[in-house]
Image (cartoon, rainbow, N blue to C red):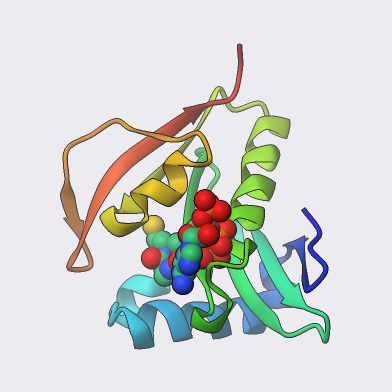
Length: 145
Ligand SMILES: CC(C)(COP(=O)(O)OP(=O)(O)OC[C@H]1O[C@@H](n2cnc3c(N)ncnc32)[C@H](O)[C@@H]1OP(=O)(O)O)[C@@H](O)C(=O)NCCC(=O)NCCS
């Protein structure tokens, strides 16, 4: 989706890592207190990334698609939340997962974000578990049929 106030594009870790790191540092490391050693998990170069930028090109949100079809690291700068940025990033990554031929898109949702993912067609498939001190549940969305 291309909104009037922002646009979403696929990003490249080698070229866009500074912008992607900026968002994730603010949201996960500073706001959610995720240790940096967990945040920078070494697989970003193997993932496809989506980034949302404002009209001036400043990064406002991001997410990634892992080689196994998992979507993760969905993050939107606090002042931009509730503006459709997260939904647009998620739509883009789901579309990319479909293009790549995955039968389903999967993610581990922080429990507070479950209603957000449910509105985008995902359903809970597992029991609660802890990751980086934050409660999560596995969710998935069928992409075929
Ligand atoms: C989860 C997250 C990525 C969603 O991004 P977002 O840009 O707020 O998402 P959207 O604006 O597309 O959708 C948020 C929904 O909540 C509603 N909403 C209203 N006010 C809101 C607010 N202040 N903050 C968030 N959502 C709000 C929106 O209307 C929207 O509802 P809809 O889907 O029925 O339209 C974002 O909240 C975030 O970065 N959270 C912190 C990091 C995090 O927890 N990531 C998820 C890890 S699993």
